[in-house]
Amino acid sequence: MICSAKACRREATWALLWNNPRLHTPDRRKVWLGCDEHRTSLADFLSLRGFLKDVVPVADIPADAG
Image (cartoon, rainbow, N blue to C red; front, side, top):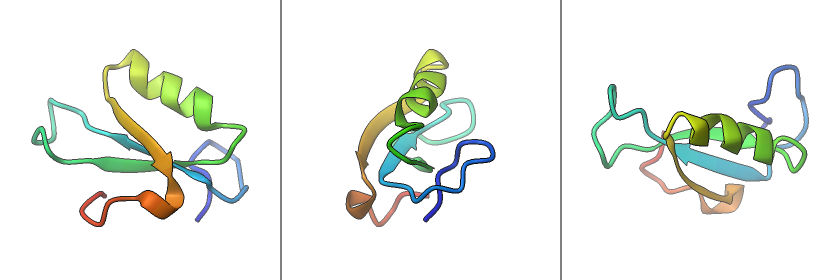
């Protein structure tokens, strides 16, 4: 799994679970993947928009996320 940050090709270690309330039902979780370096910037981007719901290790991505 590769980090979702633009032009990053590092292995993802974090899953950022998010939801756009204008497009998704409240229980739906989309996933961005982040390496250690980009975890914070990706989370800040999602948080600023009110989309970030949780950050978990990649190994703990819920089966129903995506």
